[in-house]
Image (cartoon, rainbow, N blue to C red; front, top):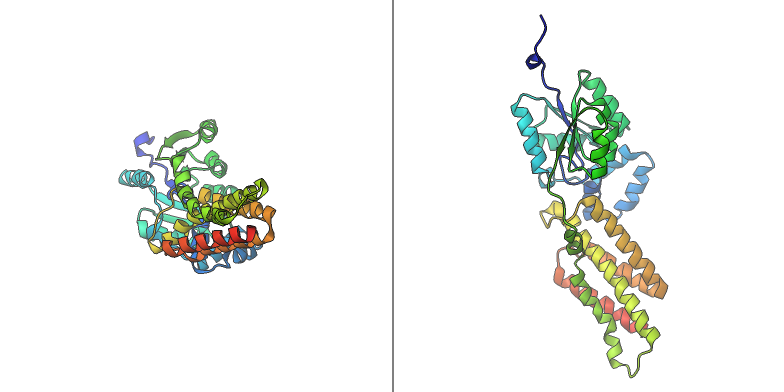
Length: 322
C-alpha cells in the first residue's frame, strides 16, 4: 500500500541562533559581558583564539556569562517556530555558539526538541553544521538561517527559510533548487546608527577651544590643531556612547540601537580613527584620548561624572595645545 503525501511527516525545522533566533551574535554578547567585568578581556580573547574559535567561545562564555533572559529574541522567528510546533513539526536549535550556552537558551525558551552547539574543539558552522544535520536528519530537514555561512547548509536541506535576507542572499538561496521561504522582520533604520553615536555629546569637547578666549591673537595653525583635537576627542566620545549600552545590557540597562556586530565594529573603528588622529597632533593628545576612552569604559553608570571628566580632559588638551 502506497502512503499518501498526508502520511509523510513534515521535515524537522532546524533554527540557527545568531542573527536568526536572536537579533545579535553570541560571540559578541559574551565578549561585551566579559568586558563589563574584566577589562583584560581583549587579551584573554586573543589568547583563547590561538586554540581555535570553539575555544574562544567557550572561554568568553566562562568569563562573561550572559543572562539569556535579556537577549534580543526575534519575535517573528519565535512566532514561526511556535506555529510549526502547533503543526506537529519537530524543532531543533543548532548553533555554532557554545553548547552550554545553547542549552541555557533552549531551557529558557522551551520551544526546541533538540539542542546542539559547538564543543570538543568543533565549531559547528558551515560544512561542520551541514555534515551534522545530514547525519542527524537523513530523511531531510528545513533550515532557518540568515547569513552567507548558511549557504553551506541550505543545499543539504529540503527547505530553506531565510530571516531578513539581503537581496544578494535572497537571490543565491533561490538558485539552490529547494523549497524557499523568506521571513521578513523589522530592519534597523540608518538613523539608529547616528543616534547611537550621540553627536550631541561632542558639545562638551568644545571646552578644548576655551583657552583661545584668553589669547590676543590666534594663528590659523593653532585653530586647525584645536579643531583636530576636537574631532579626535569627538570620535572617542562617540565610541564610548556606543559601548555603554553594550556594557550595561546584561545588568538590565539600555538596549543597543543597532546590531551588536555593527556596534562592535563601529566602536573599534571610531576609537582607532580617533587615536590615530590624536597622534598626528602629539603623543600627549593620544594619551588624553586613551584616558577619555578608559573613562567611557569605567564610568558607565554616572553620566554626570563622565561629563565632568570629558570637560576636564578637553580643557587639559586645550591648555597643553596653547
